[in-house]
Image 1 (cartoon, rainbow, N blue to C red):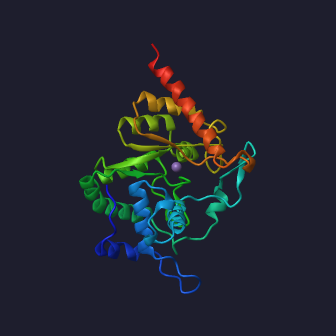
Image 2: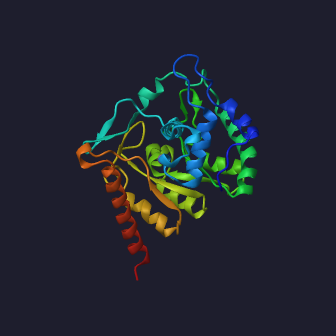
Length: 284
Ligand SMILES: [Mn+2]
């Protein structure tokens, strides 16, 4: 897909879905320019600093995309630790005590209806342009948060989503972290991963480990959670998965170790798992 600016017609369809302009405080940067800038970076693959200045500040665009991406992930305010490194923590009692995020409680059927409408509109366009949509689970994967049902919190809900879409254009981000958060609620991760990979539904794997299944967990280093991540890597190799496996959230090393060192450690660990899994599967 090549970059082009949003047309007036496209912008008219998107605009009503953005939050209204604040009446007080500093006005938000121009939404249309910012969105064009984000699309430019995502489609061209360039660095944020190379985003054309006509779309405004690249820092604003980067921050806006980050906010949109993170809006769906719920975490407890207090961070925790994995081997003394700062890590995300979730405690359901605390999250369940939070007020409605959208004014009232919504029913599961209402949200499935929305999903069905969205699929009906988007799938034909995705098929025509050869775009694959990657559905990530709700994080944390529980039935409801802040009054809004979380549709994708079990293996069955994935199957329902695929059935509604009725097209290979709907795939998934297989998030090992969310699956492990869900534990028995989400189902056996090894069987789930094998099925999804064999069905060619996986667009991208998010690789992450956690301390325990819900109701409370801390994100851990890959080699410090309750799952033996080698078993998951081996399933990917066994099922001939040929997509990307990307590191999901990981605890941060102390600052003196240098920025990105926690990430480098985790990627090195993933590389070693892959090498072992390949050696094991293709031996002899
Ligand atoms: Mn994820």
